[in-house]
Length: 396
Image (cartoon, rainbow, N blue to C red; front, side, top):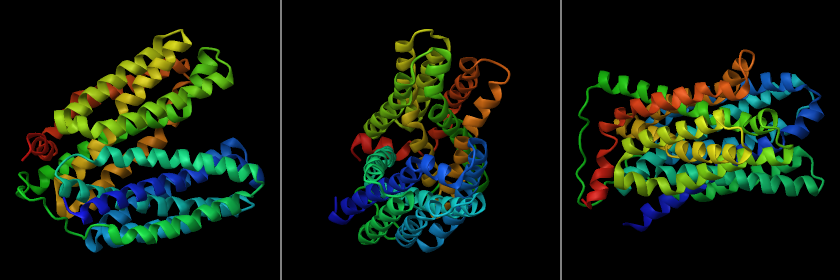
C-alpha cells in the first residue's frame, strides 16, 4: 500500500471530522442564537427547513461538479466555503437574515457532504476493502468535538459569532492543509485487482440507485426520529427525570459511533448485504423494545440496539451508490444522500404528526416497519456492492 493512499485516507478522515465539527458548532449554538434573534421554537423549526433545503440543493450541485472536476478540487473548495459560511448564522439579529444565513450554510454543508463521500468511495475502491463506515464514525467524533469546544467558548463568555468565526477559521486552515493528500480524480486500483466493468445497463443502474435512495430515506428517517424523540420518550412516556432522559440519545449516539468503527471489518467478512439486513433487523428489535417496555433500563437497552443496528446501514448504501458507476459516483451519491437527508428531516416531523393520533411510544411502530422493510430489501446490495468486499475477504 502506497504512502499516498494512506495519506488520502487520513485526509478523508479529516474532512469527515471537519464536516461533523462545523455542523455540530451550529447545533450547540442554536439556543443562544434563538434567544438573540428572538424567535419561538415553532419559528426556529421553520427556519431549520431552509437549512435542510439548502443542503439538499447543495448535494445535487456538488454531485455533478465532483464527477466533472474531481473530488480533489471540489472537496477542499467546499470545505473552505462551508467553514467560511459557519459564521453567518451567528451574525443575524432578525429572522429574515437568519433564514438567508441558514440557506447558505446548508447549501455549503450539502456540497461538502456529497463531495467528501464521493472521495471516500474512491479511497475505498483504491483500498480494495471496506473503509466507508469508519469515515462516517469520524463525522460523529467531529460532533463531539464541537460540543466540547462550544461548551468551552460559552464558559469563556464568547458570543456565538466569535466562537463560530474561530471554528470557521480553523476549518479553512484544516481544509487547505489537507487538500494535497487527496486522491486524483481517477483512483488507482491496487495490484492484483482487475477493474471490472459494470454488469448492469444504465437503466437498471439508475433504478437500483433510486432503490438505494429510498432505503437511505427510511434509515435516515429512523436516525432523525431518534435524535429528536429518544430523550422525550424517556421523560414523557416512562417518567424519567430530564437528567436521566438525556442519556437516551447519548446511548443511541454512542452505540452508533462504536458500530461504525467496527462495521468495516464485519463488511469485509460477511458482505454489505448482510450488514444492512442484520443491522436493520437489530434496529427493529431495539425500537420494538423501546415501544413496548415499561422499564427505563430496558428502554436504554432498546435505544442502544437501535443505534448499533442502524450504524452500518447508511455507509453501505452510500458505498453501493458510489461503486455502481465509478464515472458518476458523485451524482449517484448525491441522489442517495439527498433523499436520505429528506428522511432525516422528515423523521421528527412524522413522529410528531403521529403523536396527535397515538401515544409517542406507539408512534415508533412506524420505525419498526421501516427497519423491517429495509431488512427485506437488503438484497439490492447483492449486485456489485459486495464484490470488492468478497475480493478483500478472500485476499485477492
